[in-house]
Length: 263
Ligand code: G3P
Ligand code: CA
Image (cartoon, rainbow, N blue to C red; front, side, top):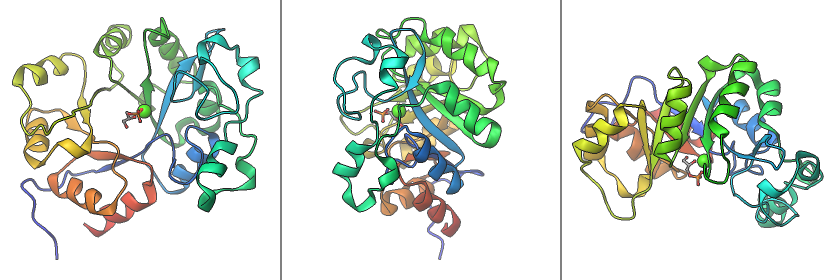
């Protein structure tokens, strides 16, 4: 039987594959995105950083240390240098139960490659990382979105309000989401914060662990969307849906699709 929440579930609950289907494949790589699309995700979430020659590449950290066989800052390497790195073997070593031979030797994708490969097949939730380390990334990103004619398929999110504001002034049509991270429970958001976010964004993405149904109700009633992250376990997915979230960021898009189906 259906559990009644404080709010009715949202009309459409979106699945956002966090760094691709990163529970099953190396994060932010083409196979992780392919797998998420096979699982019928609505969005693939990906993080971008600029190379030394100012090409947006898809990688979460500001350094290549964790997810490749190299070391150092992304911004100190040219695209050609980065393209020699192995961005998949770390996953095989860390997650032997999901390891696959084809992950060894994967490359860090450029944003352009991702756009070329998947086009309008999926929607993109692109995160602007470390705007201070990636000057002018907003303009470069907007140029790529326009070049590939993907304005209707891209949303952008960031922890950086100033970066989102810059984007909003460059291209007010792109839906923007303010990411927030709470280290204590937050069940009520100051109205002043909601009103400020509404001047440039269409939604808020909070860490799931510190919010509750009142938080979700308040943000939704204000007219903003709410996309908690990163929701990986079924019990939390069920909760999020009952609270009426508009979607979740998850490393396991197949699990969340199943939860939506059963709610
Ligand atoms: O899904 C929200 C998330 O992308 C923000 O955190 O560190 O995974 O990029 P992070
Ligand atoms: Ca991210």
